Length: 291
Ligand code: FES
Image 1 (cartoon, protein in one colour):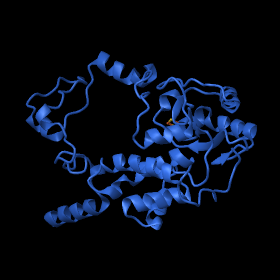
Image 2: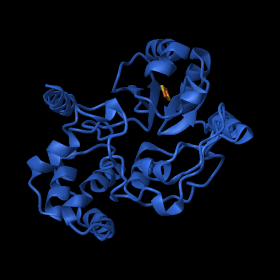
Image 3: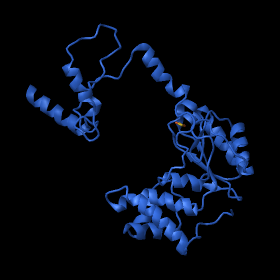
Image 4: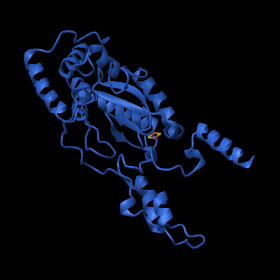
């Protein structure tokens, strides 16, 4: 696929394609109480068809959701996962966030960028690979990490990353370190992100040894998370000195989404919970009491 400047796909979809996309759009919209809420998966649907958020895709989303093309564009240009020009078959994302960077991510990036002859958000001339610096994928325990269409390739080196890119360029199948057993194309991945599963979500392990190490250690030591304030107040027992085990939160006090004990609404328990303005007000109040 030759590189383009994103000026393709200006004409609308043909009748058959539009009917197919409209059926998908109806399924997406049915998930939400308000149709406009369906915009994010709709944009992924467009990418699954065109390989990026095309002008005709923007017009399609606007027509389906009762939005203006300006409103659709405003959202599509905000998130980096929405591509403004045709993407390669594979997005190779090198994590250069803090931990991966110091574990070798920066070196991997330099090597891959030199090897492929492209920079961030650029695509090889054959259309195989779009290279990206990506932020933390919550896979720091396997740093440095490279993602291919959001599948994990853990503990990479510059040499292994180049070998991976060469396999992708040659059209050979590659096997992620965790999760799905194979890597699909950018368009196929975009359809999954639109909410149409491909049946591979439960393939492979989700959490390996390094991810579970903390949990295993906590269980061995009998450590649990501290209770919520209400549970602490209800507790009448004082733990023995040096005891690191605390009573697990009672089920009746477990935070519920949107409930009073959500993190946004629970009472302040530490100085860090209080905003500078509130701290000032409290200090003024305390000063007034003392005078
Ligand atoms: S810093 Fe790379 S996965 Fe977290």
